[in-house]
Image 1 (cartoon, helix red, strand yellow):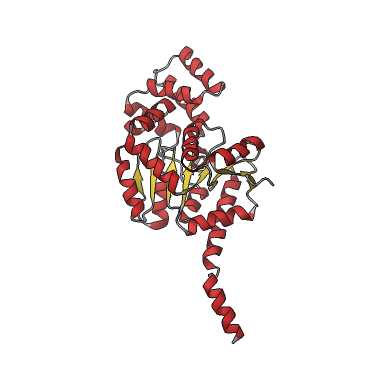
Image 2: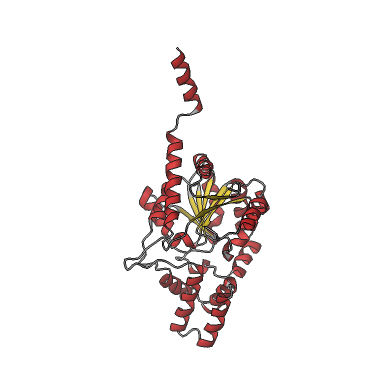
Amino acid sequence: MNTYLSDIDDKKIYRSLSEALASRSLILFAGSGLSAQALSPDGKRPPLWKPLLEGMIKWCKREHLLNNAAAKEIQKLIDHGFLIDAGQEIQEILYEPTQLQRCIFEKILYTTAMSGEAHKLITKLPFRGYLTTNYDEFIEGEFRNQHGIPLKKYYKPTLEGVLETYRNYEQFIVKLHGDINDPSSIVLGNRSYEALLNNNQTYRQCLETIFSMWSILFIGFSGSDPDIESIISRVAAFDGNYRRHHMLVTKGSVPNLKAKRFWKDKGINIIEYSEDKSHSEVVRFLNNLLKSYLDTQLAPSYDTKVSAKIERKR
C-alpha cells in the first residue's frame, strides 16, 4: 500500500486521526456526500451536487423562470462537467433570494429528510469544529440532539466570531457556501465563492487560520469536486508539507498519481472505501474511527504503565 493511499481497514489511519481527535486538533470538512446520508420517510436522499443542479433546472422550468432552450444549454454544461458554470447560470436566474431559497428547500428535501447514521457518528466524535459546503442543517440538528446545546454557526455575515469560539474551546460550524435559512448568503457558482474569498479579508483570514492550525478530514467529496478545488489549493498554500490532512473517497475515484500529488503537493492523504448505493462504508469508517478514539481514551497512559511496572517489581 502506498503511503499516500490507504483503505478504511488500515489501522494506521485510525491511530493518526484518533490522536488528532484526542488533542482537539481535527476539523471535519463535509461535502454533499455526507448530506446524501440523510433519508426521507419515502426513501429519498438529498442529492449530490450534479443531481441538485439538474433538479434546480427542473424547478426553474416548472416555475416558468427558464424556457426549454435555455434549460438544455445549462444541462449541456452539466453533461460536459462544467458544474461551476452551470451553478453560476442558475444563481443568476434565481437572483431573488427568496426564489433561490424555495428552490433549494425543495430540492434538498429540507422539510422531510432526517439526518442519517453518519451525522450521528460525526457529532459523537470530538471534532474541534465543522466546515461544510452544504446548505442544510443536518449537522447542527444532530449536534443538538446529541449534546442538548446548539452548535455555534458561522457564515459570511457572522464569521468574525469563529476564532473567539475557537479560543474558548467551543465547537462550531462554518457554512462556506451559506445557510438555507439566510438565502442572501447562498453561493452556487464558484465565481461568487471566489469573489467572497478575494474581496472579504475576514473570511479569507479565517480560512487561512483554520487550515494552518488544524488537521482536516474531508468527507463527502470526490477528488474532482469543483466546489473543493479552491479550498484544497488553500490547504496546500499554508501547510502542504505537513501531510496531516485526510480525504475519504470512493475506491478508484482518485488515480494513484493524483493521490500522490494530493499527498506531495497538498498534504492530503487519500483513504478509499468501496461504493454502494447508500455509501454504507462511510458509516463503517466513522464507526471504526469512534471505536479507535474510545480505545485511545481508555488505554492507560505511559506514566500509568510505568507506575504499574514499578509496583509489579516491588
